[in-house]
Length: 265
Length: 319
Ligand SMILES: Cc1cc2nc3c(=O)[nH]c(=O)nc-3n(C[C@H](O)[C@H](O)[C@H](O)COP(=O)(O)OP(=O)(O)OC[C@H]3O[C@@H](n4cnc5c(N)ncnc54)[C@H](O)[C@@H]3O)c2cc1C
Image (tube, rainbow over all chains, first blue to last red; front, side):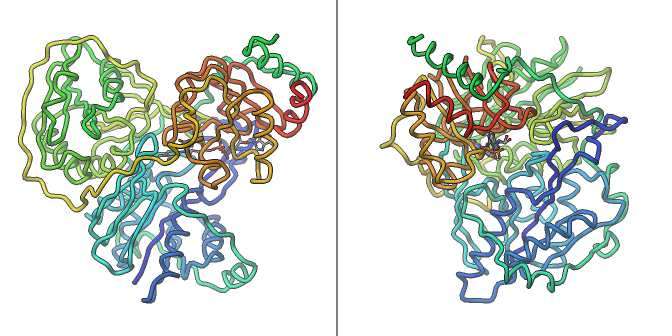
């Protein structure tokens, strides 16, 4: 049995970041990379299914991205994933979330997993569409924003709890194999142990290219994307009046706001 | 002349209010000779036709399917055939959990233009240009869709003002009860925490976010909230970690704090899902070490500073 977990290395912004001269993205010097928060939860979900299972389960993590992505994949290996796959060819630069879904679906066709997890969204772009796009290319059943799961590896049905607006839950029975997008809070992600980190250094990270997947250059990258960035800009800062001064002065002003609200000042 | 198709949303026998906001988004780019078609999909779809008969809507289509509960396969098939019938130029869906479950497959299969969580639409000549946020709300991104005849967008909630004025569109019924599905509703589970205080009714909230760092720091903020007369609430990571009950979570998947007048946000970055629960509050004070935190874009007052230092000083005013 096999669970494929799609992960992404996301970028957050340094303080005082700047937009590139072509106004299409943030200047690379200000990007800080880390594993997407949602992916900690999908990996944990796969790991706990593996550990509870009577049959052997292989957990494979896959990410689309250049060399630097290795670091995030190592982190997943350190937490116990059996194997990692990094997919990259320069032609993939500029792929949008659906196109990344196409690439990951091609990986799934080769790996033939019994279940695929992806995060609900990534914290940088928050397109919230890669996971469902994978399902679309594979023509697999799919459900989004899963906050609870009852699944036995190899079973042809799983019960997933979708988290709806307002915290309402909806239990659904879904045919498997399926693609589920995993929500924050579905479990408590583990930390990598020292032993795990040591072992991860020795585990393989397979490198897969466009041609290995049987995809053509026209099927990936910016030209295959379903949208195009015209301009990126820093929005107006809004109306907040900044309370300046020493900490004591700032706190005094906050106290005054509270007391005025309560009619005590 | 273009056709805009809006897919409204219902749940548990009620029309979801965001549907009316999405109709408003359609109006924002509607020109005189355009056509706005609103579809509602469900077993009881006809019962929503009156509520959707609004000003600026030309046609309401009630699509009858075999399940009243949202189903990704059924919605995808139903919207696909609506798109074949109406050949819309733009399709607008709510940016909701349901839409997230099928909008990407819809776009992929038809090779349509696609963007999610859009909060602005406009035309630059013939080109549709939409705006969404990036990098955790710190930048805005304008996108377009070169070479695409049709574009599918999911629309952010609480941006467009719900259309309320009624109108007299034509109505159509379609039967698509033959669509099968690979995913069935079992039951709904109401959120827990009915025994806790109802945070939607309180007027003064102190809310803690991931900035508090560790569970052991929760107590000092609980004390601070008590001292100042506030109700202690939180962002999602705090509830997910079990440091405060889920009933105290503010936001899209938590509560909308409808009666709150003063909201003090401590170490909360201001994600769109958190803001969905509190951005309407008239007086928001945000304390955050990051001067670029997006919570400052909606706050009335901002303090760039450490929540622990501020809390220590603040305490002296209430002890
Ligand atoms: C479908 C869906 C539904 C969701 N529903 C909700 C919801 O209902 N509610 C919700 O809150 N989230 C929700 N989220 C999650 C949301 O996307 C964010 O992950 C979450 O809101 C982040 O919480 P935060 O601001 O506390 O944490 P972070 O984004 O990590 O921000 C922490 C902030 O604390 C600041 N900070 C750190 N240390 C200090 C210090 N010592 N002093 C001052 N400031 C400090 C940092 O600068 C940062 O700005 C949902 C997500 C999805 C996809």
